[in-house]
Length: 298
Image 1 (spheres, rainbow, N blue to C red):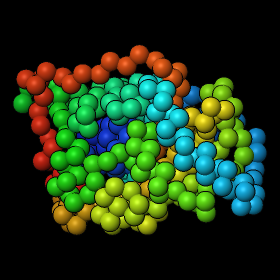
Image 2 (image 1 turned 180 degrees about the vertical axis):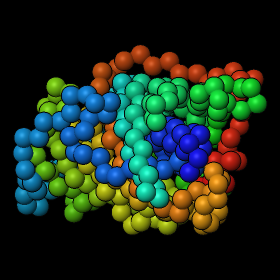
Image 3 (image 1 turned 90 degrees about the vertical axis):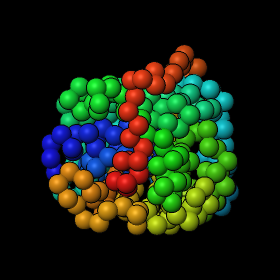
């Protein structure tokens, strides 16, 4: 994989995940499994204090109730600071990307600074359109920003543009979680906050666009979630193996086609609920539309 192509792909893919959506936006790879106590950006991390405590049916039902309501409770805070670490691996290469910024928990809009491969990139998500200000040498047509309309790109691939892990999409996740899918695994301190940790399995078929999504990620979505005393999400980890859509080019050519399979681990943390968030799309004259290229690369 060419260095410039890899970096651009990694930044784009990491940016999409940092925006809490499941849509590949470049030809980069990267990951492995994030360590359970690896805090985004090398922060405080989680201090685990318990072991598996799944308990009986009553305990499972209580855990399920808390997990299912966590998305609503988190969204009620309206805004938060967010840190995200994405590890991606494909074809023997592993890359880590870190992002820090703020997010509107009701709309899903966000602004982040993403660092990967020694490069820094500004990223905004506005109404499910991803804007990325890439390093100067990667900007197109003399314009500093590129954009990917995530809904259009996903539609062209036959998948869904709905967010995966977005607290604003509480109804979809709540429906996809049952009593048999939630296990309380202990307690932990996340960035100085006491939390309870759960292991969750999400039925992909119950998510928006589930039929198409299953072809890319399988039947279930493995997730771990850390809830504070108010029932809000403080940390969430999702581990995926993503298969390229059937519409994506087969194999790999020099810097063009996408890998047929990519492993991805995404660790997100929320803090400072209620913080100020001001996100606007860049001026149209400074933006190059890369939606078609993103959809084609899968």
